[in-house]
Length: 219
Image (cartoon, rainbow, N blue to C red; front, side, top):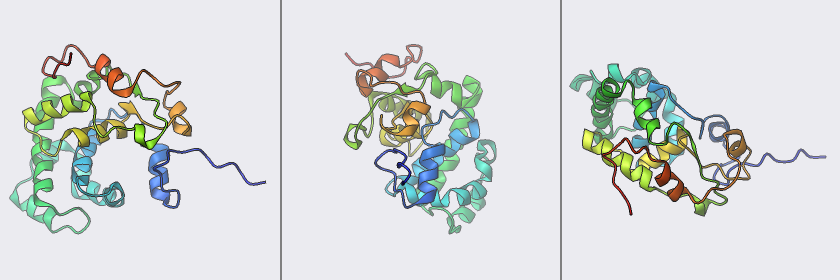
């Protein structure tokens, strides 16, 4: 008798082991480590216009090239470092994306100083509790939400680049602020999902931290 297939999100290409492992062990897991959050900002920005598989396959090269995604070290990169990165075949050699990583590192450090860490600032938007969307199909997963709109707007105001609302929503999914695993995926329940909520956008808007006065309001 064949083993019953493990139920996973429909977007997972089962023939690609690295992608399956990413889905099974990383995607949607609540992430609060400062270096890993900075990594997510850089990699999600690098993905713009590309397939995530491209970035996933280059991730170890990125970690080596960007000093383990230590924002303090990346923030000190000068023109020589940038030139070297643009010659590195192991990463996406897009000048705007490379420069944005350095600029974003400097903003990231400023936010760490202001809020005692980037993680506390980011997680405050969801009251430190992952949102459970309860999606059932790929069509249910939005490209962005009022929450990602608000976070993107604030990060842009602070000077970050490549942090549009779609990129930020992908970060929220990847770093576990939103559990967008399908309800029939084995990871949904493991990451706290129990039942479908009142709708992803409405639930997120309700739970945005009221102390963050810079976010846009809706009626």
